[in-house]
Length: 377
Image 1 (cartoon, rainbow, N blue to C red):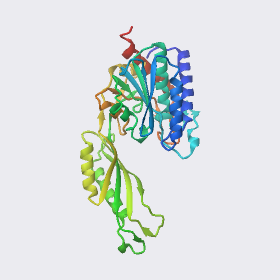
Image 2 (image 1 turned 30 degrees about the vertical axis):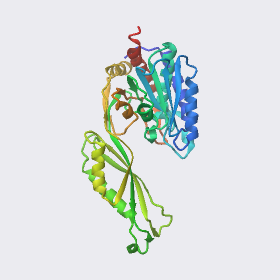
Image 3 (image 1 turned 90 degrees about the vertical axis):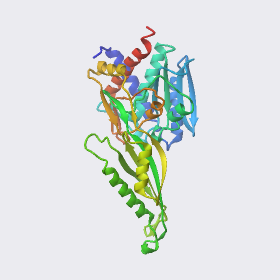
Image 4 (image 1 turned 60 degrees about the vertical axis):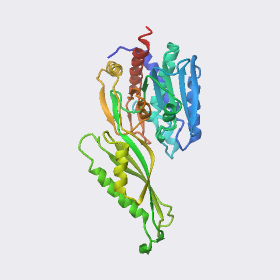
């Protein structure tokens, strides 16, 4: 384990805790676009005192993003990537952070206001100590909505590129993500004929037909299940709706949303083919978003930094979820996915461990020193 200065670590911890709490207090959710704008402004103001960097704001489908690059460097050797949007909760009080059991507790703390604070502090400190260092920063605001107007837009249309990206949105303190499942969000529509519920023979109930076909689809996915670490395709029914406002009425239309996850060697086209075949011709399917499974190659320098800071070797995991990393990996750019210890993600009791925040900061600091400064020294 590396030797560190306790006073320096304490200062890092104090800055990270204070910044994380300030960020959590802004309920930057898709349902609160004004707070998204407020959080973007907060981040911009936090870094605008830096010299020799260019801060540029992008906006696609009214979704704001920030990209901060060293002057005269369009393709940084390393890009720090974070998102400031969090999952929405009706009770705004859940965005009031508290310190409990050496954790920062509050909605959005683990995904990913705490990691955003670490990325901001790393970026600012490296540029203050090493002006002109080839380190960039991208902060987006739509990851929880799929990321297509954030990182997707920045890489696919705005032309953002880098040598390596660090995305602290998966893994854990001693864990590096090496694979993510693919994802399909699917919207289903089934048409029928409305009638009085007391005379069902006069109607054609689309809700019952839709649920029957979804049940068949669930059975299809159960056949793909196997023992182990859940590395198999899953299908989750997340929403069902009809225009009905009366209990004694058969609706004329029913809709549902599905969240499908799948590992390699399955593909989007293969999964869609199986799904539409099982659902049948009476169910209309509309893809909301889709992405292929991803595999990532570990960086030996990052592995070494983990072992030096924590005293334990890095391990490799596969994630059931997807992240913005898929937009970057698609261009053949190496992506490092790891983060501090977090828990209860997307819940009102979300938390991030404070000591692991400091350690993750030190891991990234050590990695960046070797990646970016070795040639300069």
